[in-house]
Image 1 (cartoon, rainbow, N blue to C red):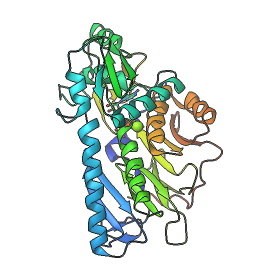
Image 2: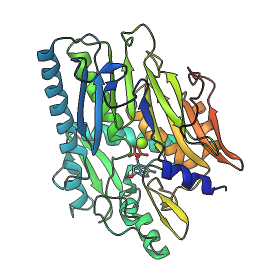
Image 3: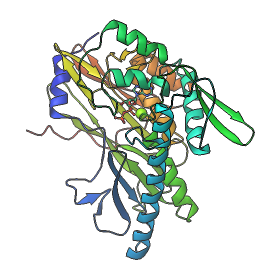
Amino acid sequence: MKRLAEIAAVSVIGIAAIVWMNLPSDAEVAGRPVGDPSVLLGETMGTTYRVVVPGVTDPALSAQLKEGIDTRLEGINRLMSTWRPDSEISRFNTSEAVDHPIPISQETFGVIAAADLIKQFTGGAFDVSVAPVVSLWSFGPDRRPRAVPTDDAIAAARELVGDVGISIVPGEFGLTKTAPGSAIDLSAIAKGYGVDAIGRLLDDVGLTNWLVEIGGEVRVHGPSGRGDPWRVGIDEPISGERSVRRVVGLPVGDLAALATSGDYRNFFEEDGVRYSHVIDPRTGRPARTDLVSASVLAHDCMTADAFATACLVVGPDDAYDLLIERGLEGCLIVATDDGFETRTTPGFPEKLSPPSPPTP
Ligand code: ADP
Ligand code: MG
């Protein structure tokens, strides 16, 4: 395994995951000036969102849309945010009821059922019942000091993974804990779900031409309105240089959602070892492979989000096979002896422009 000093150097520079093309400053989004009625900006899920609806020129309609988007996102947070003690999922997590179903909304149930399927597809690399381990490693909302736990504590938290079942009794959706202390963490999938939900909202009001992004997870529908594909940049480290941007055009239609997970996004270091917030549920420890970043293209953003996280868990070779097996496309940035290597699946969009020269 090559965890190079260089990776640490990259984290100091701070490679962002997905950023906009044509974004020299915060004054522009996707080539449109901020303040343009077609650009809607806001905050949600501890990060920012950006929505571009090329057809919208009326400021009143724009304001109305933004209100609808904020309301929808607030509703999702109220259900699924583990960072809110009063959300539906937090109430499930703190509940002491064991072995009988706790009723949950159809919406949360749907996300957990989808996550369960992805757990099966990824051999348990993606598992939303990993929450007790996330919290033990201090990446959860409880803000404990960041330190490596004892082996016993890891084994105990690991035991709780998988101890949540879903059930449907007629007319009611339920979640059941089979052990006290088991809990659900939707952080690796909720942003993608939020993107899809806002996309549906825009479709529902008759806007078939849009781009939605939450915290780097993005989905597009219809043409960009500028006669070219929607462009996004994936920041790509190159050994000995500052990160450069690989710009790609997102396909419209199938596989129009792109999500990225990176081990540099949230981590702590102890004794020179980096511990990432992406956890291998099978070992109860942070994922440690040569894969630095995974960007996944899928039909919907929830799937892209979950698989990007799963890729980091399984490492570059298995990630590549997993994507091919599931008909997804991906761009994997791998640490090598000489620096970094970018591997893409055959259908991943080509670079649109050569890398820009390193910034001094
Ligand atoms: P980000 O939140 O930076 O977009 P991810 O989508 O990869 O990154 O989500 C990582 C978060 O998901 C972690 O902070 C943790 O809360 C949770 N998580 C960590 N490992 C897993 C896993 N193997 N399966 C499901 N959720 C995970
Ligand atoms: Mg994810």
